[in-house]
Length: 177
Image (cartoon, rainbow, N blue to C red):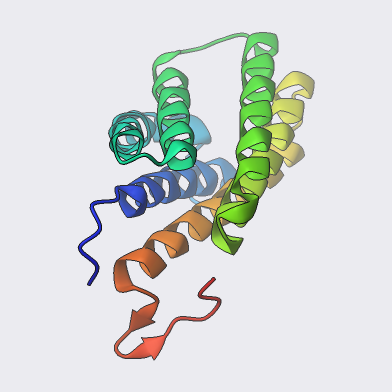
């Protein structure tokens, strides 16, 4: 294992778990759930852990991961603590964060396939969620939740690649780039 003091795997795991929780709960696959039910997960794992991982990345000189993790940590902390906002406020909030996610997508272009997938899918998820919120469209909200879940899987896989150095039980993991 590498002796690298990077917090990127931690940040990607926190982002992955939060997006998976938000996404799966928002799809309605589990009865009696909604994306709002992920608030405590979003606050503790998404908000605090991502923010700390981002600060660690900044300390190590990684501007991209530092920016991504601290800003998304702030997003999850605000989202989980905001309470009930009217649909226009919530929709605008999601659109503004979609712009941030779009910037992260552009900045991740040199960071590899899994970063591009994570932030690109996050952008799509936020746009769909914003439109669904502004238009009160349940179908788009569920589509946005599914895209968030897939983005979470991409972040999780990225962390797995980093932590295992691309191998598991001596076998190279697929799509190791």
